[in-house]
Length: 521
Image 1 (tube, helix red, strand yellow):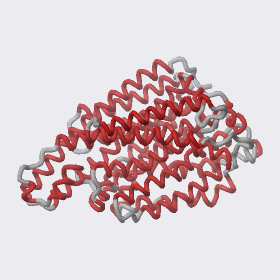
Image 2 (image 1 turned 90 degrees about the vertical axis):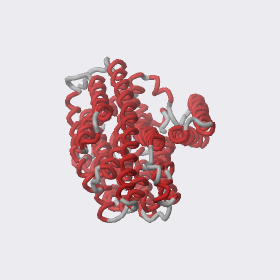
Image 3 (image 1 turned 135 degrees about the vertical axis):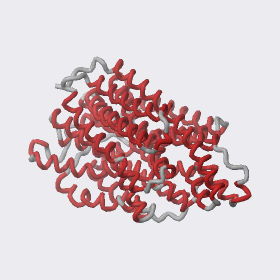
Image 4 (image 1 turned 120 degrees about the vertical axis):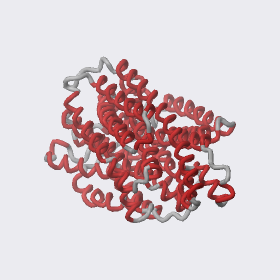
């Protein structure tokens, strides 16, 4: 992350000053920056619609299936801090272009992974280059748009692109899987990166720190030692119960977190400036950002499986069914920009989180047997909340930090996005998998009708159960489908109830902590 001293210098360093640029060049530069934002957001959710095909093709275990989803955002979130600091040294535009080339090349290679292990490795490698993309975008936007009103609109478009891309991912993913094969969801990165690689050198001005502090390698290592063990422990606890290995992993990660914080407080130029978190508005806005993405990504994870495996929708049809949510997310992010001139922004953030809670309440207390309409309506309500909360919380994050720490604030905001997306799939996904496995009651005679591998896969994932049912005679197949649907539905109710409690609590906290933040000028 950019240190406070480095941020002071960076805020005034740009190769071509904004005053010398025509306005149309600024907005074109913003348009180009949306390509990596969309790519990272799409990649977070597009894979969820390929999971059933991946499960059938590569036959991963339940834990491997979650790691296929989580390996990318885990590495991404763990390295955002380090890559933000690297961007200060070599130039944010240069880092952006380097990450774009690497991401496109590795995406093409990962599309042809021959096994679950190779796919997990490919996803983790993509996280390395993805971490080069995100720290550059928001910092470059702040340099390109120094005027507060134009910058607020640019940040709103940036946030709408991220949340809209998360909703757009299933549409792309569903269509690509149906028309081609699961690997096609990775190949989409290649055409998405081409416009940026071609036009960025001409339209995006370079930004760097002319006198950066030294790179602290121990801090980089510690940041990874915090993230990986904690998420691993959460996943193991949810699927296998609170065993000694899982608890030891969580304990180790938390201990490393303490060491990391103490080191940052002792360094003259820390990797992560901890003083920013002393501002209650800043910390609450970061929390709102994390929870908004937590709720959205966790919801899409189980909705994608429900639509395809239980409702029988094709991948593309399931993706198209989410288009209203995509529109709602983008529209909400743009509409609330002028709204905060009339309503205190803290109340707008609280209202967005309350919408998210309302979306989860529909799932918690609703009946899922009447078709997909209830879940899609819940997604629409949730999308309105996410678009509202994350847009204004981003503005609060940047506004709460002093000008000399704007670079650090931007990088922390981006880390919050990825941490929220990671925890949404890791925590809710793990709980959903654990609930499915514990509540599944397969027919007593299944072992006599199906191979042992098919029985094992049916007990691991919903996709495995549906695949096993497809090869069984009608009476047994129907019993397997019914048992799997019931077990999965019970898990959805549990995860939705957890999401409801978290969002409702966050809404109350946001209203209390952020209530004194003044209206926008």
